[in-house]
Image 1: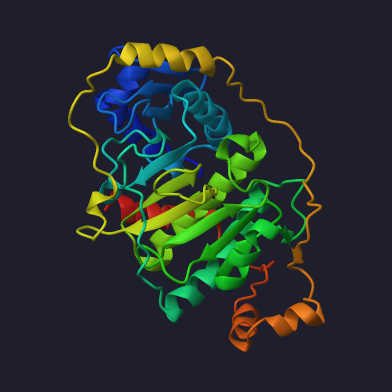
Image 2: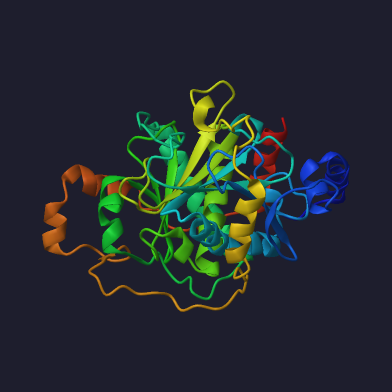
Length: 372
């Protein structure tokens, strides 16, 4: 999104009172675990788990849609490497990444940031243990199905990718998810679905087609793209479903709230006074252990983090796949229930080359809702 002079003036005013801008400038002390030209990671002074880190851009942006493309790429392209460094330092099998967009979603500062939570079995953190029980109405499903592919199409018009040619293929590890849920969008790298049951109406899940389980193995390009998609999903939820905020939660690794250990991205709509107030409850107690020792352990690993964007060939799988762009074989077709075939037929969305909607208008409208 292009920042207008008025918005830039507002951001300059916010920066004067922003504690995280003061941390970036070293006016306020912190335990730094990673720093480069554009970004900074520090230990949370009230950690939910040991190694709980906060990752941010040095420049002040309040929410994801404000972040310029190149800085967005740098932040989210570096994230898998930084997560690996923190996990390695804490000897953790997995992690959560938590993002709050909007005050009702738990955003406590006007400086956009994300929480990296290294996890292990028995750590006592059950905030992200989902109990899906809500379905989205047909009207809302059709609204998202109509608009979201156009939003992504507009994104690719503004940010062309050499690898993007079609909707791609479905790897075997996503076959069941693809068949049993409502497909909202897919390309060569991601699958976006509306689950039959979510933890809130409008809960949307995003999956990587290039990595089944380990977030830290995502390339710079793959990580950046999947977060571009999740950001657009959040905008669609603001615009189409009237959400006042969203949470983005990444799960991976075999931990208490992710027993299968698979990699998944969850975009959850939030409204004031909703039933998800316990989703993010930061600790109010300082830890009994020495944060400086934890910071030193992470720094011993994080020096390897190096953002480097490079062109990558599209990965193809040797395992059997379902070709989305072509019809199923007769045998596979017979195995599907009539209900599933009707659903797939009804929800197949073609990109509209002549759409007049623009990504800027959609994001601007969503931002107004957040600010109000």
